[in-house]
Amino acid sequence: MSAAGAAKARRIVFAGTPEFARVALAQLHAAGHQVVRVLTQPDRPAGRGMQLHASVVKQFAVQHQIPVLQPRSLRLDGKFPQDAHAARLALEADAADLMVVAAYGLILPQWVLDLFAPDAARTRLGCLNIHASLLPRWRGAAPIHRAIEAGDEFTGVCIMQMDAGLDTGDVLLRQAQRIGAQDSTASLHDTLANLGAALLLQALAADALVPVPQPDAGVCYAHKLEKHEAALDWRCDAALLERQIRAFDPFPGASASLGGGVFKVWRAQCADASSAASAAQPAAPGTILQVGPQGVDVACGSGVLRLLELQRAGAKRLPVAEFLRGNALEPGQVLAAPTLQSAHHASQG
Image (cartoon, rainbow, N blue to C red):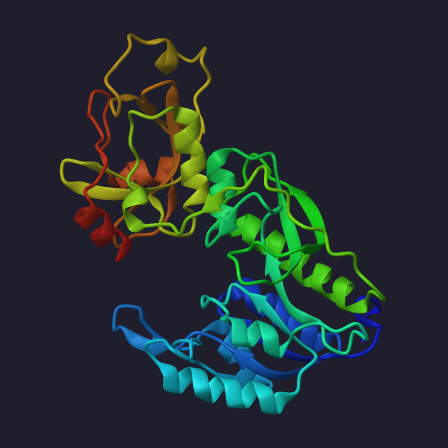
């Protein structure tokens, strides 16, 4: 067992679905804790053939012979009460010390919270959530994306004691992480996933933790990303668009259109105000000001955005110099924000 998990091994029910959760599950398993059951989202259709695919958490559980449950809902009075009742019977029989939740995708009803309610002897530790923000900032589904989009200097991870609210529980441990100027959701996700797993092991090894209620001030919600947000609105400030591009990597991918064709923008930077493109006569937002191997400069509502990495539908992500060899972009052309339908088609490529 690792030093972080050198305390008593716990019987754990783990609830999670994406890669962020798989990292924590793998660390729990490696540290010697007994994961007695995994809850994860039902298999979903994906890919061109839309075949059913298991979550990465389920794949890990199956590989390590951990029992898996995939209820469509945990609400006893909801649309799938048979799923919820079956889950309740299984969890009661598991007699676990706690539930760990990481990006599960279902809200825990009160009966789950009651089943794992912590006690004074610490034989039960409740439901602990690994949340990728510095609560109460960025409660909700997309905290990593929204922190980058908003231009936050720091984000981090909290280990939270779950209650009936949406990410409103007391914080047991927290650790900050600076957001780098080049960080995308993809890169920051990996950093925070490892940080969250380490912080969870630290929480389980602690003799006692002091729950800290979240303040009322500073609450904001990280709403789930929608595909229509991928379309870059060139009327916006260049700095905002640059953050959106990083925030939407890898999903849904920022996009623009030219002459009906849609392409993805994966990397960009605000152009130097002293450059020729920036100093040129003000142009309408979306107008291409300059094209070269160093980048494609585009006029924005405020400032100029230099596009550095692009992708046509069905093709690979390419540095701009390579992209321009097979795709003609010229000064004076005007980029537009794709419609929702055309952006969706581009995302399928």
